[in-house]
Length: 562
Image (tube, rainbow, N blue to C red):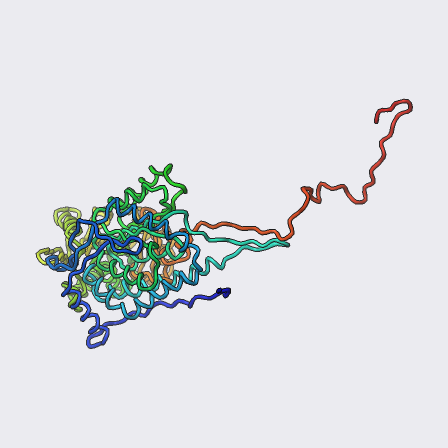
């Protein structure tokens, strides 16, 4: 019997390792990379804690070396989805009834496994499977995922401890029930931490989950599942269903009467489709499903005439080109005043000239390959459109090569019209577009920034002038769910900058925060009366104590009451 009220460990952000030349952490992850290079793994579905091997498979290859085979992944379909739903429902009651301290311990142990013995594993898997540099893998697959697991436990504890007031003879309680049914987690290719957070956050709150990882990040997803399994996650709580065809998992899952929630990160088009499908199926479901989603962004940096040139240039290079611009928060449209532009262009060019492009195993490469052929072709299409567009010119980069890996040079387009194609549409690659505005039009340019894109995810202002910062913060209030002052618009840290945006960027439920976890519960208010009334009457409908009842009078000879 456990009658204690344990307090979970206070979370702290996981320190980022530097991987400097000669360091032990550098040598250790390099050994792991070589081990992964020398083996080929088979990736099954995991249903009810058991590996399942559907017949058809597809190859898993590194984006930077698409002729090398890392593994083969088995493709899930309707039969596997049905099995996973049954497993999730079977596991639900016991998992939901488990003490929170026991559920929390599983995810806290997973965090410690990631921080210690499996740090090299998850980082190497991210580098090879997602094409990340060691730094991008470290801040994502290791540190951010560790932070998600630890901080989510802390936030969940806050939720459970939040109880209502009581009154005389009455004890009030809030029960934070999991949703009634299963949650479908559809996760993206670009962040190993997000692909793990989307199934684990609902699971922490007592839900059971069907997890559809992106086919292009299945390699780190496999190791993530195995780490959760080692941490003690019970069978059926999270069921992993790989599939190159998302509809093969999504359609049967959304058709189930037991579907209770969608946790999504991916493209706007896919999210729109899923939302529409849920709407069409409403009569099927036992409950209105929870929908939480983050799509993308056309994220901006605005420089004021008072901006520091070197700081702004560093923010452009990092914010636009780290992880090849494949972040939903990446800076892909820049607004620069005419007086600043010549010096800023010179500084950006100087910094980009120092950047090298190549495979992530070579730690000197700042930029690696984009994720796959489809992304390569899309990004190249934007580059070639700019090359032919009279309203645009390529002022840096613009070359590409997919013979060995899907490599694209960091590319800067200058738009001569503020709503040129690449200023408005999400490209999701190492391409950013600059519009140079007259200094005196700073205020109107802010309005232009606000109205140019349908998204509302991240953005930044660079300025020394405080009144300019204040004006930008006010005018761009709805343009970004994460707004940065004199900093690049990427790199939100769990526990410090809860992440998410509105407009067409999603539901803005702020991953890595109490706001997100609240979406995965269905609160029930419970009132217990220790001294319930024994008669229907209230004090207000009783006669006044001082009031005396008068006897009715009768007239002489009349027997009726007057």
